Amino acid sequence: MSAVLSASDRLELSRPEDRDWWRQAVVYQVYPRSFADADGDGIGDLRGILSRVDYLAELGVDAVWLSPFYPSELADGGYDVADYRDVDPRLGTLADFDELVAALHERGIRIVVDIVPNHTSDRHAWFQEALAAGRGSAARGRYIFREGAGPDGSEPPTDWTAAFGGSTWERVADGQWYLHSFAIEQPDLDWNNPEVREDFLTTLRFWSDRGVDGFRIDVAHMLTKDLSEPLPSAAELAALPVDGSHPLIDRDDVHEIYAEWRRVFDSYDPPRTAVAEAWVASDRVPKYASPESLGQSFNFDLLRASFDAGEFRQIVTDNVALAARSGSSSTWVLSNHDVFRHATRYALPRVEEVEGAVPNRHGGGWLEAGADEAVIDRAGGLRRARAASLFLLGLPGSAYLYQGEELGLHEVAEIPADQRQDPTFFRTHQEQYGRDGCRVPLPWTREGFSFGFGSGSAHLPQPSWFADASVEAEEGDPASTLSLYRRALAVRHELLAPESLEWVETGRDDVLRFRRPNGWEVVTVFGAQPFALSLRPGQRVVLSSAPIDGDTVPGETTVWITGD
Image (cartoon, rainbow, N blue to C red; front, side, top):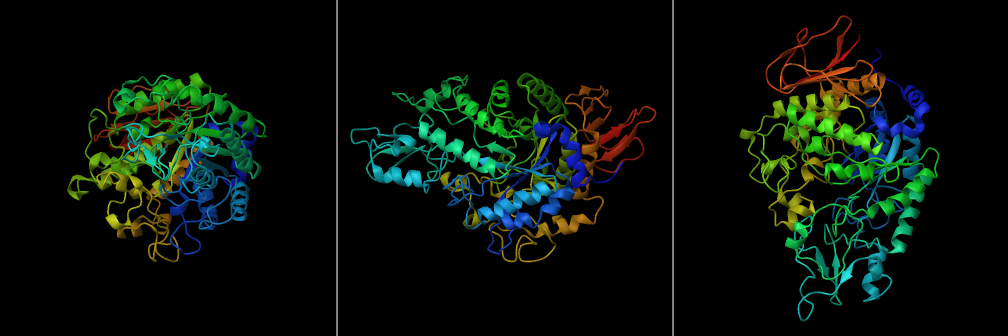
């Protein structure tokens, strides 16, 4: 079995199913401002990514997903978009983007870009026009403006709370209020407006014409809203069922929009793909993943789970069934730009779910409680993270990796208050630390101003332990997490099988074993005690997340098995 597939080899493998390349792809998320900085200004850029395309090719990914690179005031890390059809000058130019697309395609790597349709930046030309135009104008009709409550309209129209804290309404100079589901600088668009719908179709064509292969749709479940008067209170809103008719989230009518988008995607050959970021109940996911809608939807269940065999088995069983219902493939995610890195999640004491909380999503309050190193098992967290990653990469469907997880990076806790950037930190009066710790720029070298990220400092402070977690430190170490990921992606390309699995009983509740249709088997020991493999004649272990002793798998380890 070869160690690495070349770009041409991967292209040959993909050609018979070009239209379905995404179904079992490994997609690597690049957060552009924190990946690589070519001009030394402390902010990652497109030419920085371009300088590292060979790294991505050697890693063995099938596609790169670029988080927003559009002009932005960075009120929310680039998700406040001021122009959907351009590149932020701090990150480069459209010519740089075209060069990056070409370089990735030459290496057999496709490209997916973020689309942020729920809201624009308050610096967007449309919103500036709306502020100047005043009440009742067509410009304001692109957004959601309302008169305030109270005798003089000085109170917000409702008592709703925004995702980043504070009121979901902001007052403008003439006394009206606009809706912002996230930061103040992110006014929500009104998707009942035909002009809004048509403009986004233009945007999708603009990037598709430039060679983009697919789109990741930010908060895909929030576009359409029913704001008929009287508006409900927060308590009334919370009591309403989320069944397709909720006023603000996961409405059935959002799929009318995505049906229009699907017609655009399907007008290209091969069709452009899309994946929904939809934080919805599991039984609602197939609507977003159907061929008539976006075609694929993120499954965040593993990301929210503890390192637990029972949880993992139920999640996999449920989501493989949901994928079959939708006609799509499932997606598997352990980390991304919005959540605590999974090496650190797994290093913390297990947080039991409490009402209204998402266990482990942001570290269970560990950061806010002082980031006490005495309660964290970093080595154990990395061991479990490696095991979970190999488990995930063996599953049917597509795998989404987040930059730096292939280095085994932990969450960065030591960021001073005056250097934090996440609006959650400020809107909650520093009570919630938010997402800065997973967005710290990557370490490429052992030394340098920013560990090789750029020639100057990085826009978020990097800890000293980044030196030993850098690409340079791990490249020459066959036991490193980077080496494990490279081997795993190479072997995965050779072992890909039809999108199904069957569970193999192990006799232990803390050990999972599943078999793919071609005989590829994955065994994960979630507990601390070793597990003796039962191998049939001709079977052998081809990959392990930790060293194994003969046919004995140590605790918190995953192995891949092939052969008859």
